Length: 569
Image (tube, rainbow, N blue to C red):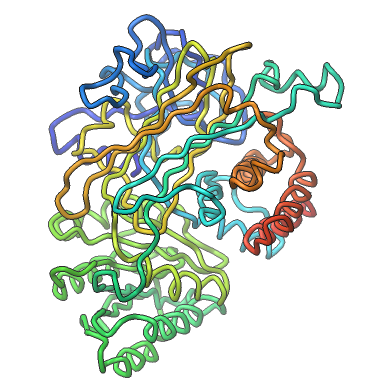
């Protein structure tokens, strides 16, 4: 999922030189790409922007029957070409900094390609931090994880079987007849007219999660941090309570194993079929006590070894890491940790689900582990969060419906002047790798939705086709590739963002989450990362009204969280 990590590994295995996408760029179709050294017009903003494409002449865009379609009728990927400057291990070139808008020429196409992601840890950790009266570190704010925290608020149609449906919609970010006055209404920090800006939303949905009795059995190896830092209230005590409740929710034919780690790691309970053994599982949970330092590398290595030893054919085999991810002993680098268990991941397809806890939390390490471990992350801050994750979500969604899922959006140069993908900075995929199934994507389960939000500036007076979105994935068992596609016309982007229709569709909560992440990331209210940014106070009011309209507790919590950020100034 991380272009500078797992995607790079696959390219190196093929003996190819990895290409790193650039960060923080608007896409201006019609300009030719320059070399990495030619970077102009850096302007500080809060939101890192995904590298997207635009060009003229021989560009490979899909316009409903254009030359840019492959034989299967889907938009063709762009030509092989550089997608940004080479950089260091964090994916930034020398002299580039996170939070900067870099003006550089785009590749000669109109494509935006990224690996799917259902992580939500960034939003959960931001909520916890704000509850404690602190603003989150901007580096921990990932807009796509704020947006995808409200997947159940979306009205996307779902498929009958495995795979995805594709929903593409959008709205104006500002009404043409704004009452704020002509000069204020039609100018923004980008130096362009607000009335030409739109939000374009790409929504991907899998089938509903099956009842517990219909899914395949699960073989879950829980790797539990029992280091000294886990003694803080709301860490190990929360984990133990949640595991105890979850043990009663799982089926008799499910199996669990427990591995604990501090300065060393040990298998507390080998893979054990629940059946009549629930008492044995509870006894093992009760033995967990905090002590010593955090050798996370030893925990993950022992966890995967235990999972392989207890591998069950026909079951969903998964490692669940529960930790504050504050590694301070042994191996502390995510790549090195996962290299130790590479064979187990690739040969047996054992995915890693990271669950973060604690007011001090190693966000970057946990995200990296999950990205490269073919899994995802979430964060729990209280008993309610923990019960939702372990008792509701995990038992239902332990199955996979798609492997290596990637999305590609093809914009039409006759209607689109610029576009920007909000978030997904660490999920970028080179355009030419969209249909290369050796390049990793995201692993997605039933009951999930994935939302990508674009800021799009349409050409004045433009009409007709705007974009085509395609999702590609592999069948989790046969590895057979599949694709699904959706399109949108300019007329479908003309409704007001704050109309009743967008409230019903879920687009409003998507926009509110994106605006909120932008404000936290930029460190300034009304930053320049998204079109027409409202103040935090206005954003809180919008969220509060929407929560009342939809009678939604998660949106009410979002409104309260924005209020806390507003009070902090």
